[in-house]
Image (cartoon, rainbow, N blue to C red; front, top):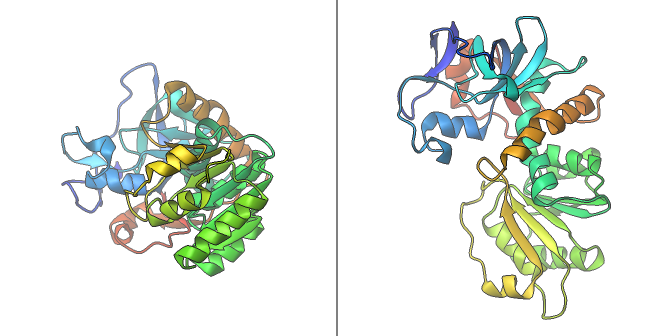
Length: 323
């Protein structure tokens, strides 16, 4: 079969022949793959820099962590597999296969799940978002941030505040459900003051963060208590696009009712991951099929994988490989 293969660590995936996968147990199913999306996770795993690959021995391998396609009976499905997915065929454990509803195209179905993982898992399991709460999404102009706005509103958030650097994109987020936008281009003091004003008028219950780094330092400083009782805020880190570390004053932790946690591979329980596949993704698929959840995609054919791998794909669109 044809597939996207990494032959050496750090190498560019090649469009080449690879042995057909074989079903090795009654718990697995063969899938004819129709599309697979490429995420930061896939690029990092392919290069061997992601924490989930630390103990892997390098050998020629397929790229991709999930995909969509057809079962042998013709049923449309989404699937997750650690054996690679950007190929004409794949094998997946039945536990990691999700039906795709009628009315949802393959490219959208391939693009959505990772963004749903990066938004719904944090909101549902880490912050335990309740209807009527206020959410701040830090770094909302990217693919997952845009989906997070919609998921927060679908989950009953009363108000969604967004931050970002690109003013044009930031302004467009109102169309997705954002209620207030704060530019990360503001100087530090103006940014902190704006967040303080918002928090004083409408206390922020949840911060969903995609960029970490200096902006989170500013947010924590703005939320810092003054010795009186403070509003409880739950901050969840989902990404680190602006840096992997921050400086955190112990006074913020002692003087503020704040909970800091992370959401990503390794932080979810088996039960939570099961709910992702059996409830959350199916629900979001249906919402998308009904036209109430949107994600932008850039579509490329499998044979062109080498060309696009190092191209600057629009950061606000999900790259989808058609197979």
